[in-house]
Amino acid sequence: DTAVSQTPKYLVTQMGNDKSIKCEQNLGHDTMYWYKQDSKKFLKIMFSYNNKELIINETVPNRFSPKSPDKAHLNLHINSLELGDSAVYFCASHNRDANTGELFFGEGSRLTVL
Amino acid sequence: DAKTTQPNSMESNEEEPVHLPCNHSTISGTDYIHWYRQLPSQGPEYVIHGLTSNVNNRMASLAIAEDRKSSTLILHRATLRDAAVYYCILRGWGTSGSRLTFGEGTQLTVNP
Image (cartoon, rainbow over all chains, first blue to last red; front, side):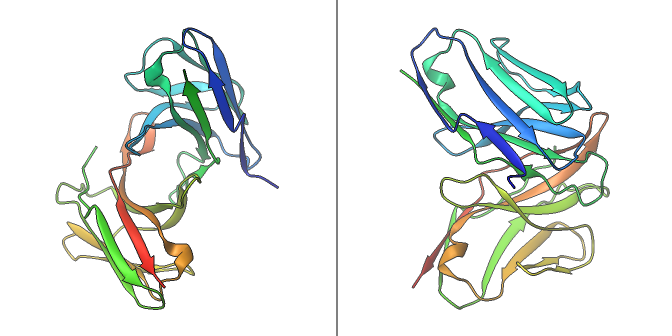
C-alpha cells in the first residue's frame, strides 16, 4: 500500500490555466506538507497543515491555495499558471511532535507549464 | 533555520565505505540532525537521524562530532542503488512545530 500518494504524477498545461494536485496519506499522521523542487533540484517548503490547520505558509504567491479537507488529505490548487511554476511538487507527512519525525514523501507530481 | 554545508558531489566505488560529511556550525541545542536521500525520479526518503550520540540503523551510521558542529553519514558498503542526492538537514523547532529545511545536498556517484 502506498503511504503517501499524489495525483496526477504528470501534468502538462498551458499558461493561465488553473490546476490541482491531490495528496493522500494513510499513515495516520497529523501533519502534511507541500514542497516544490525546481529545475536546480532545490527542495523548498511551501505549506504545512497540522490537523487541517495551516501552520506554515512560506512566501508563496497567493495563486497557490492549499486545502486540507481532513488530516489525511492535502490538496494544492494553482490559479493562473505561469512558466515559473514548472517544477516537481512533493507532498509529505509526519507526526509533528514525534521525536523521530521521519518525513514520508510521495513520488512527486511533475508540472510542466507551456 | 540553521544552515548545513555539504560537498556538491562525491564518488565512491561499489562495495566500499562512503563517508558523507556535513557542517552545521550554527546548530542549536535542540536541533536534531537528519539525513535524507533522493534517488532519481523519486521523492526523498529518510535515512537516519540523531541528536548527540552516534546512531546505527540498517541503512547507515551517523557519526556526530562532540561539539555537534559537524556530522558524517557512513554507508558501510556502497551499492549502485545508493547513487542519490544525500541531504543533511537540521530539524528545528518553532511555534509551528518542527520543520525540515533542505539544503543543496551531495550527489553521490557509485562506480561499478
